Amino acid sequence: GAVVSQHPSWVICKSGTSVKIECRSLDFQATTMFWYRQFPKQSLMLMATSNEGSKATYEQGVEKDKFLINHASLTLSTLTVTSAHPEDSSFYICSAPLPANYGYTFGSGTRLTVV
Amino acid sequence: DAKTTQPPSMDCAEGRAANLPCNHSTISGNEYVYWYRQIHSQGPQYIIHGLKNNETNEMASLIITEDRKSSTLILPHATLRDTAVYYCIVVYQLIWGAGTKLIIKP
Image (cartoon, rainbow over all chains, first blue to last red; front, top):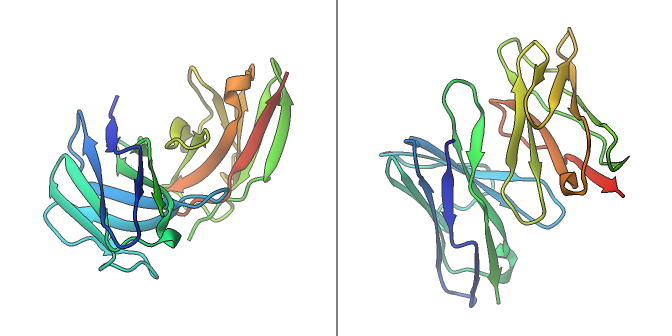
């Protein structure tokens, strides 16, 4: 089935540094990728939608200059957390829509800890 | 926007059927209902989806009411590995509710 590979699965970084998270669609083309953030014991919150070849669309309250999204090809979308702070520590998940009303497939998530 | 509501938590005995309800009273005619589950610190896993008719696959069954305002996910023989948070969402609404934390007890 359609798989989205997300890397890294976990990362620890120092405050002020940047972290890049990659999501690759392995056996299908993902023209759209959704990026979610999930805090402990909470549900998924949509951060932004990336579309191949165009600018990402950010949800209200999400800083586009802090969370840089690039969708350079039909199989790769990246999220870069710039100047990370401890409050950015969270579980980040990407998701791509599937054809024929089969919903979405999800990456395995990235646990970001900023110290 | 269509939203879903689910009970925050449920317990079920191992080997018994787990029935997880979901209300989606504002669903529109062409929106599918999807069920996912999330085991701790993993990405959501697809379970099943449906539009109008009841559906069954190797993981679960989905019962959708005739008015489509609610649905029930049925795990026929729950195992300890089914312990997870179960989410019911309406596609194309990317709004995730809190889900139901299902705990399977031995």
